[in-house]
Image 1 (cartoon, rainbow, N blue to C red):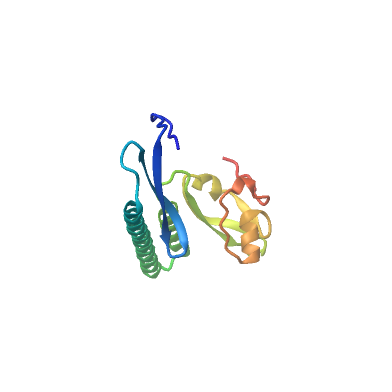
Image 2: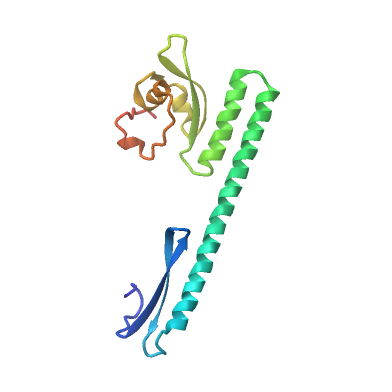
Length: 178
């Protein structure tokens, strides 16, 4: 194995051990050295396997801790939203606060984040923006959707949440003028 930017060794040895979490492989731990040094033996491999198990446990624990922290933040945000909802009965104020909390919780510090609430109008077809927060709030605030058309209208009509990671590639995509 040659790594760019390093000297190529003609005589190199390598030990590898999988990093596993339960039945899933989450990575590989690799040790390599020039063969001029003592050859790897079974005790070396056993030691590497032990280290890889510890590393996998540490990685899994870190991931579980991050997930728990994220859930705690989400719960705190939901509690704050619940408190704000009970603090006022004005629909627009409540929706603006919920939209802002959703933006902060789900978009985080990423640029390009926007959150909005569209409500179905009395005609039963038009979805109108009631509140919008974020980078494109101004453009989105003046837009409308039609039930069953575009991603927003499709989600409203089908009553099914979706995650769309590439909106430009989605055939339901509708351009909102900037």
